[in-house]
Each structure stands twice: as C-alpha cells, then as structure tokens.
Image 1: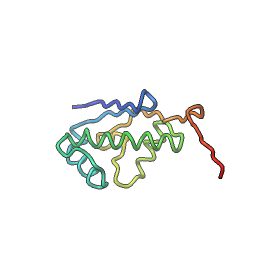
Image 2: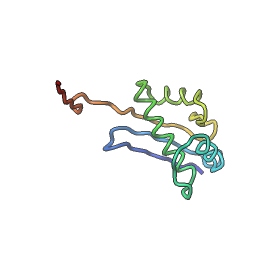
Image 3: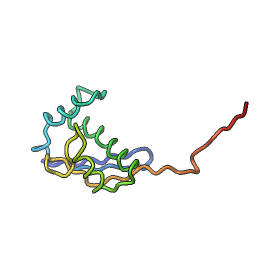
Image 4: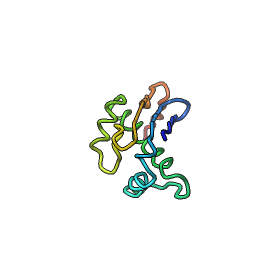
Length: 114
C-alpha cells in the first residue's frame, strides 16, 4: 500500500511531501531511525508517522540551509548517517520540498548603546 504525506510548515511557508510504500518502509525501519537519534516523539503513535515528521523537518532545514531543491535534498540524505534514503529504494520517496525563505522585512532589530 502507498501513502502520501504532505507536510506544511507555518502558513505554507515551507513544505515537504513524501510517498511511502508501506510494504517496504515498515514500522521496524521507522523505529530504527527513531531510535538512532535522541528525539522526543509519541511512542504510542504509528512510528512511520512519527519518523516522517522528523524527516520532513530535516528536509526543510537542508533545503533552506543549502538552497537545495528536491533532488539536492534527496541526494544529501543518501549520505546522512541514521536517516533512510529518500530515493524510493527503501520505500520512502521525497516527492517535493520547498525551503523556508527568510524575508528581511520580517527581521526586526533593537540597537542599544551603553
């Protein structure tokens, strides 16, 4: 069975979308990733759902930090320890990621002198 996950950060400020083949990317594989890191997550929830939340955030971070598109983030994950590949080979495919774009107009500064 295939499931689609569409994550949106903020008010459509960034997105990460995945397709998951649940026959290949199982709860056991999801748990391996969750247990590799010291993440807090809901241990009573579906581990696939929980790990996808963590991976979505990391995908958005990688895209934002490096100005990468979906291909660049997928390639980066192929070399990241602890994370599953996002190229479909383990049943997890990153179909789209949009980086968070900082806007100078939303940056406020307070300057004081002593």
